[in-house]
Image (tube, rainbow over all chains, first blue to last red; front, side, top):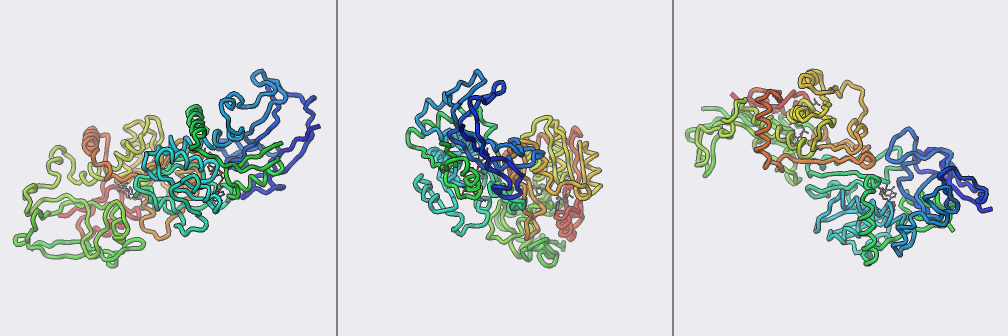
Length: 301
Length: 301
Ligand SMILES: NC(=O)c1ccc[n+]([C@@H]2O[C@H](COP(=O)([O-])OP(=O)(O)OC[C@H]3O[C@@H](n4cnc5c(N)ncnc54)[C@H](OP(=O)(O)O)[C@@H]3O)[C@@H](O)[C@H]2O)c1
Ligand SMILES: NC(=O)c1ccc[n+]([C@@H]2O[C@H](COP(=O)([O-])OP(=O)(O)OC[C@H]3O[C@@H](n4cnc5c(N)ncnc54)[C@H](OP(=O)(O)O)[C@@H]3O)[C@@H](O)[C@H]2O)c1
């Protein structure tokens, strides 16, 4: 019988999640033939799973409201994935179909791209830059976590749009990658002597800040206090937060543009692959500490 | 000979300015008849002077750039005022004219209103609410320093526009005034048991924050660190700073609307008057600590 690996949500972490304490690896056998599906259910064999920072936000007390619901204690940690339907009790989904199969057939890119550059992180980059940032040719953009799943796409679209692109990351191989992407300025924020809070104090008058995430604050009970918000008034700064889920009606133009840029070689995409669910918890922690490099994908054989 | 009082800028303060240390009262005699004016100069006898929080920002090291230039050490502290021209070497300004006389003749309001509700603070309320806040009927607005020179105008315009208006202030007479203005909800933030950082955590999804000022941060070397900025992402909040000086092309529509609302009795305006320049430094400090109540105006006999 095939075995089914999973990671169970065991307890709400205060800081960084710890394997064994907050997440537990389980292996169960699954009898596909005799597996009984509820009405409308399908059974999927996963090929790729996505690990994303927002998943940390779901590891919370379910009483705290947020834009995605909390994970359920005792249940498997969920995420986006790509797989094949092996059993179906739903007329819309036939056995053998791949989820997203229709859209995917139009493209010749690796399937995993649908979890990255052509998926949620790419869409975040696209709407965050275009709809929230509203960039104008000749402007300068500064991107933190610039080599990441979202950041690398933001920077490359910004170059396509004629912006001067400055990016930062935490190690030299990431910096090298940003140079390969022709960023106009790059620096390692761990080794450079920059002001503690570069962003606000160095902004231009009328600057816009696209608040996409604050990953350093996801795993701490003692959030960092930002002390220079007065700049927001004196420099007429706009800080705007957004959540990609609110913008899914833009999917078509997003796919069209990204598809074209990928085909034209204007857009590259770096993934960080691990194999097997048993390595997913560590990969997830790497993502939350900056040890990943590129879009974190779990490949399942 | 008439005497001329002034307050000299003596030293850049770290915290609250101290009379004698950072500001000094001086009295000089002035021989108006023999006073020699440079080309284009005029000599004005002041009747009203305005005290405004931004003046604290001018008491800085001149090397620090900002939206208004720093006061010059050893010179008189400047501000907006209303006065009569007593001597002129400028064809555009005739002796006996009042500055702003042309505009003022259209209105029957107290002259000092041109330093308040019809002046810079009123304009700040008007553009801050309308252009930055873009309020829609039925929305809720929360106003801090709601009884102040700017705040009381924001609240009343918001009522006119059909918003639900919640305001806060630091003492019960201010709160009573806000009730008289028919605010929908008012509370004294010094005595109420509110969360430490009400604004961000209690905002609705997609809320807009008009960042008009941060007066508690003007007199401190240890700025407060805002720890809940992550809300900006999860609640899709927009925080937008602005400076009224960028919006002076809106003066005409501002004057027209405010004029009408004042005449219709839809707008009231509370001033806090002190008499004589010798009382200006204390009044300025009251403004910076919340002991003022309404637009701070210095009357000069
Ligand atoms: N608003 C939305 O709808 C939306 C959607 C997707 C993602 N996001 C946000 O966008 C950000 C990037 O997401 P992503 O998927 O592209 O992830 P990612 O950038 O591929 O990976 C996370 C990166 O964040 C940096 N990082 C990790 N821990 C950190 C820490 N403690 N302090 C400072 N930096 C740290 C690391 O980059 P360095 O090595 O360069 O420091 C790391 O590689 C996240 O904050 C995420 O929550 C928001
Ligand atoms: N962006 C612009 O262009 C622009 C233009 C004008 C004014 N402003 C800003 O708008 C704000 C209000 O200005 P205003 O002229 O209308 O002054 P105001 O409200 O008449 O007087 C200042 C008020 O601020 C509050 N306050 C003073 N010290 C405080 C402290 N340490 N902590 C907390 N609250 C304190 C007090 O109200 P409570 O007693 O209710 O606490 C005080 O009455 C200021 O921040 C000012 O810098 C901005």
